[in-house]
Length: 179
Image (cartoon, rainbow, N blue to C red):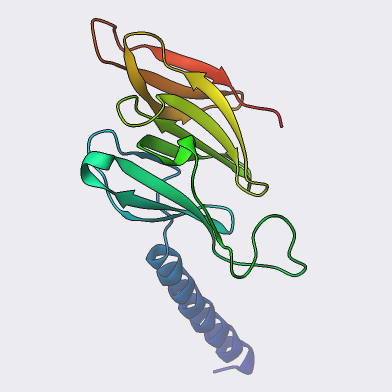
């Protein structure tokens, strides 16, 4: 057997072995879905951001609703912004209380949260998780009991209202915030 063939075969075996190790590690660490709906059932867990260093921690608090906090999982030097090594969690405010769904944006800083109207505000929010700023992007109408995020396209956030009287379910389209 020639030395060239032996090197080629060794390279192939090394390449195949590397692919197997990489494929196994990729499948073992698959991210949670970018959109998570808790309107029917709560699943307490840590939902990692698909392309960033944050997570949403979900708490199932029975009659008190499904509540969340944002956690900064990793720091790079220099540290900038409101998070520190001893203050990794952002929680509190109407956006974190009695949610129905959340959705990671397509960048490293956007999180969208929808709440129900019994215990929560019935509003939908845009959160810039890097700066801890909040913007209300939708508010329920009379006869609604909140909203559920359903997706996003390149320009819009998509959600549905939750009717609590004779109102019908409506698809709602909201432009993605620009800040």
